[in-house]
Amino acid sequence: MMRTIYGNAYRVIVWLGDESDDDHCYQPMLGDPPPRSKCLDSVCSIVNDWLLQNNEKDVEATYTEEVHNNSSSIITHHNKGKCNLNTQNWDYRREYRRRHSSLLNLFERQWFSRIWVIQEAVLARSAIVQLGRYQIEWEWIGLAASIILHNPIVDPDGAGKIVPSGVANASFQCKEERDKIYGLTGIQTTDGINEKIIPDYSKEVKLDKIYQDTAWLLLRGESPLTLLSSAMVSNDGGECHTGSWIPNWGQHQPWTILPTQHHPRFQCAIDRPSAITGNDQTSKLIVEGVVVHRMKTIWEAEVHYHEQERQAQDFLRKPRWSESDWQKCALSLSCGGDGRGYPVNNASAHLADLAAAVLSLHREWLIYNLLAFETVIESRLDDMTQFDFLADIAKDGNASRFINAMAPLRRNYKAFVTELSIFGVGPVSMKEGDVLCVLFGAAVPFVLRPVQGGYHLVGECYAFDLMHGEIFTMIGSASSGSLKSSYITLV
Image (cartoon, rainbow, N blue to C red; front, side, top):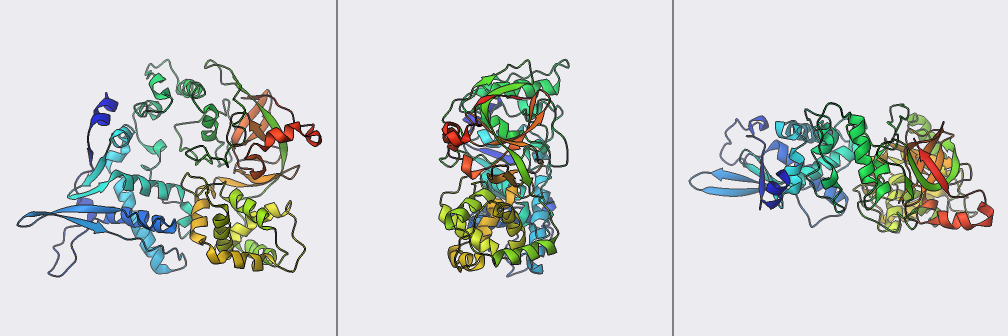
């Protein structure tokens, strides 16, 4: 019913209430600029800064105000981004906190507390959000939410604590936890899986069973193993659980490495159809694939600043790497993505952005992670240092753009090196002794943990040397005779 109503509507207006929380109790004096909405100003400034950082100069987020004097008129408010990411500047810090405090106030309004409202905005051909006398396009609200949810690195204090409870899908409130599934079934999917999910509120049906049934339905969809990218061991030290490959949709879902659409740089094992065994009566999933290597070294995500600085200075004085190795590192650090859910389109520009970032104020953390890759990358025997090489490339780079590309990954992923020198980035919860694995039909590799009866799924990962179908060449190579396909049991 909801899908029909909202899908057929020409325009849906989302009423958030009046702007009483927005401090408009004063009367402007003659010559003062017109009053504005703090919340919507913050939405536009956050979005426009982000657009500028990503070189989207022809797009601008705005909102309108209806003014009643002798006659009604509409004022369009602009809040152009400044692209100012000087986190050492106190004025910037104050402005940053002001923006996000105002945005939090917006997301704390009651409308954002119900999971069913997602359909109202998503199904509509056009959705407008109205706050008192102000109106703004829904797409700017959604984009602002995505920016602050997946870019914690831009927090001047690095704490990443600005994500509001109403932004993440898993934090929308509902009386029934199972509505985290049922509340989204009205949103059409390309394979029609949403129509096969039948709501069942009987007490006999447990939440775990609903998640399991939904997971098996998704495994029968167009890209079945995409589901596994949403399953990840929590990064709070928690252990894997039975049915580790089944996402816990009641919790905040992790940022996934997978791009929003198929891409040539994400074809790990897509050329081989998925071979899946099992049914919705079991939490055990059997899928064909290849266990590649064991994890030899896991790079810890957090190290003392002074140690990072010392290592950064030493690194920049060493002989340089080749340009192709640097490109591989640039793509690895951002897991091949641009931080917006899209793959990197220009690898050379992405490398220039990394070079600029390595030579910026954020270099210590970046270089520390590059040290993991240094253990398997050979330096070139010439007179050029890493610093000299990067300084030349960085002239055309944008440090902020690379930092934004890494932002969604920083706290959820870390670097690894396998026993046979494949390096990449995987879930922060992985451990030495876990294994790097390729599952046929999947666009990305995965990290698995050997347990009795099979493997627990730790999470997806990015390994450049496996992202383009190389596994099939490796299987056929005489030097890789130990690599064979088999049926892998996920428990």
